[in-house]
Length: 465
Image (cartoon, rainbow, N blue to C red; front, top):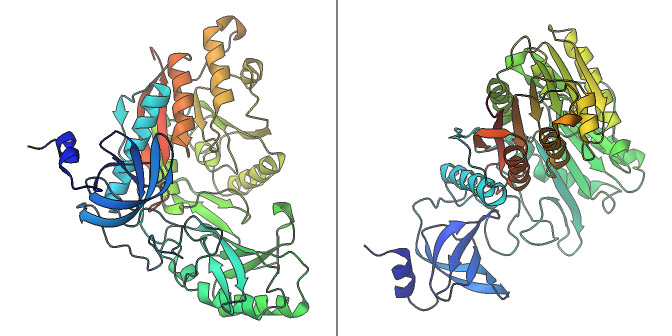
């Protein structure tokens, strides 16, 4: 049998053996001298040729030019706009890799980050959370450009590694009804007085609504407003929102119509939201994720639970159907006010435990602030990409200096939902090596199929519990 070292030495000049995929979905190979080459478009186990586009002392960036031995996991991309060619859409990076293999790559990324950055190995690797591979993306931000030279308006994502908008006519990751709107939207903007001053259309789908947020740099004319209304009448479910300045200026073009909301049927919860609010991109996976998180947390009727980085209450309100008491903590007063509205609306529909929301800067936590929130049996932590370092550090400080706790006791179980494996690994290292916890389980959540984005979930148990 020929091992990888022998295979590399025996390759024809210029060929490269790809043995891994990095977090940016680039194939990783090594030259005979050990120099790493990142190859856009290449997959593990392939033998390829590539053209170098960037050179550094220890690594090179390259573009795939030929495949001499193809991976068994390479598939034909479904979208005609995917590829390495000039003008290709940059919205997805992994359509050429079988969806099952994508998940395996993400699992490896998670495990490698946990070990190399946090020196943590989970006791159990959880089965990946998966959902539909296509038409899953209910949130997106489309760029809009009037291209005078082509005599057309483009609506879509940027080209790969470019500031230009890709000329796409269909998109297979957004709902079919939204993909079907791409060409009509181009025609609409092309007919408007504001053809030069509408740089963006943000998409936010609810269970019954396709919300389109039009960013406009100048006030819209009466004729343009009439055209938006006619478009909404012609295309079922479309609801126009206008954004003249920052996100806080977003407002409905016309009041009335269905409410923008999504449901969590397992818990009897309905979550109204504004199109610029943070909600999960993939509602199918979100439903599974919330259920899995609560089962991993093992919430009991006698438990008090804190939901850190609670947002609009995506986890808080389901927790309130299971626990004795729930506290949701978020950094934004605006989000806290919206969470309270969602709490009131759901309390009219189903029985909820006493639940409260408070606003606090969660990136400046201290042991004193942590203990002021009282004792909780369990925590749900769902931070942004920056992670929850300040929170984990305060918890570790209380473990290292028990005199600061003054009767306070730490949660005996934490479920951490992450959208960045690097910051999860950093925080896991703190909890395990300085906070007295074990990482009992971890696994990936395939929230964004065909992209290199890695979401994950991890469980921490207090040592000795």
